Length: 123
Image (tube, rainbow, N blue to C red; front, side, top):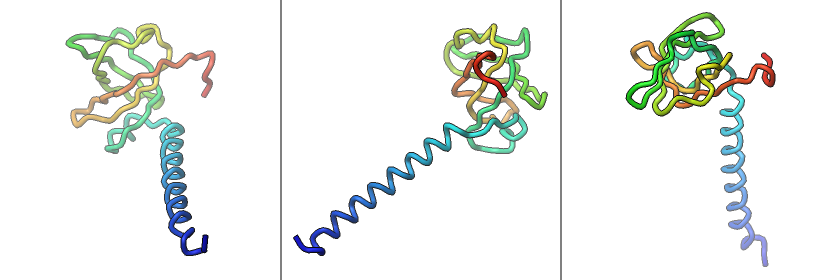
């Protein structure tokens, strides 16, 4: 087989390698994105993850939606809305991470709520 016949095969493998590298880079970047604050989320249209706590006595579940007041690490509070059932252990959670986007009305719409175990994760 001559060199000219191998060139298209090599080009295909290079393109596949670049696509895989970009996919891995993007997924790793999303997994290690830093925590934001509610103020940063309000200024952005991107999905953010914010560390904080549920304000005591504000947890509600109605109509297939969970809502609560959330206080971030900077002390700012906002209403958080999460579609679906209440996550297990949310009522007694000491710390949580909400992942989602700021809504236009000042609330934060979470697509996921992670319950942090304070003995396993340190700041």
